[in-house]
Length: 192
Image (tube, rainbow, N blue to C red; front, side, top):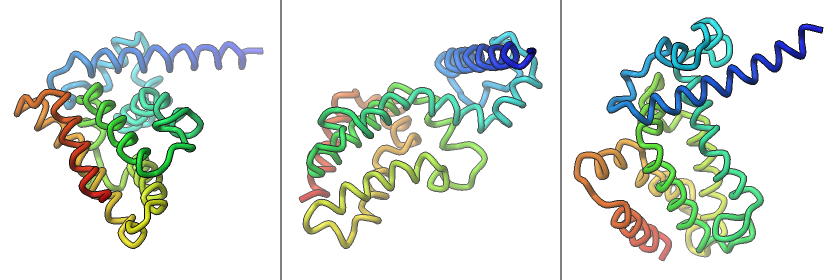
């Protein structure tokens, strides 16, 4: 019966790796400096374990991102207003964008690292398509926006790209409250 203990080890190792990666990305001034070897050492696992579980650095970043964003995703799928599915679209769109901005501000280094890895464009990432689809669906419910919902969803998501959030918060020192207010004004203008 070695299989159950192997599964327990795999679950324990996964939790340890995600916790170690979480801490390393939070402490790092530059996400590119965090290596798979650093994560393996901090988690107390071998690099082979890390690569078997996540494939590569991008796989690890994506797993960490998914782990962190899961509470928002659950609220969006079945939760209460203003993010939940029963919220009118005109209220839900700004709430979704605000929640994603809050997430990116709270997870700046991880979001930036994930958007900058491997691919030629962050728009090709699966998580981007998920949020775009959700926004597009909500926009299609707002009268007058149905013809432009595809493009409008892209524009709204561009306003909270990780590189823009990092530039405004990290380089320009724009306070969180001001970023939320600017996003709310921009979104309200788009939805008019």
